[in-house]
Every structure is written in C-alpha cells, then in structure tokens.
Image 1 (tube, helix red, strand yellow):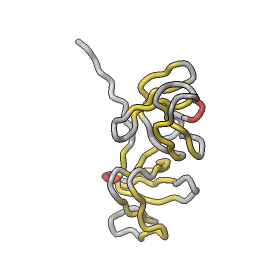
Image 2 (tube, helix red, strand yellow):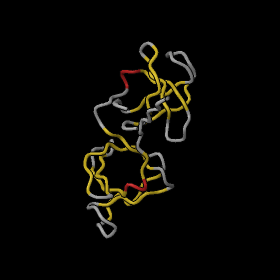
Image 3 (tube, one colour):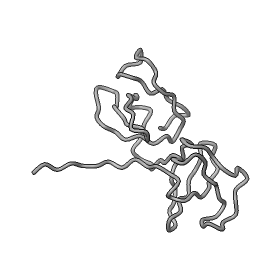
Image 4 (cartoon, one colour):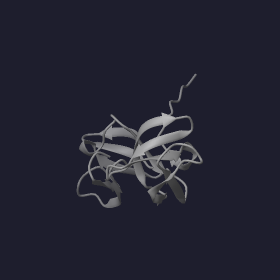
Length: 131
C-alpha cells in the first residue's frame, strides 16, 4: 500500500462493500487485475479488491504474523530494545535491509527497527507449472 490507508473491497468498484481498511505498507499478494482494480490475498488467505493506484510493486512490505513482536534498535537477539518495545499482529512495515535472519523495517511513522524474520509475513508469488 502506498497511501496512508486504503479500503479493500469485496468486488472491484468504489461502490462495493468495504471488507477491510488497511494501513500503509500492508503486504498483499496480487492475484489478477480487472480494469483499474487488483484482486489481492492478505496474510490470512482472504481475498479482496483494491484500487490499483493504492498499491506499488517498488517496495518489499511485511506484516507481523505473531501475536506480538519485539522491535530492536540493532539486529540480533541481544540487540537493544527500541522505545516502542513491541507491535501487534498485522502491523505493516516496509523492509529496507536484511542482516542474516534480521529485517530492518520502516514504519509508516518513519522510524526504523529490526525484527526477526520468523515474526513477519511477506507475500511470495508462487508459480504453477503444468506438465
């Protein structure tokens, strides 16, 4: 997501019911495009529609997949805990760097933190090949 928030809908079209309102950097898997709308899948496997101008392929976004995740100032299990100590499930971030098993992420409010890769979900597109 590139806007501060966006409405996901049950069908393509601005008059369709809103299924979920998501924050900037919320990661989604693109399934298909119809007109100016993308059908997308969220981290729970639910499908929605989002207006194409609200999304970007230019950044890697992740979301917290565990109930709470610790935020650190430096990478590593013994890294200093950040002022904002932890975040809840579904909190979205933009990934800006990787160091081993640690992701440096940027929050929508502009601060950068480190989180362990096991605590985040990132969309991965899977290709199917038929023989």
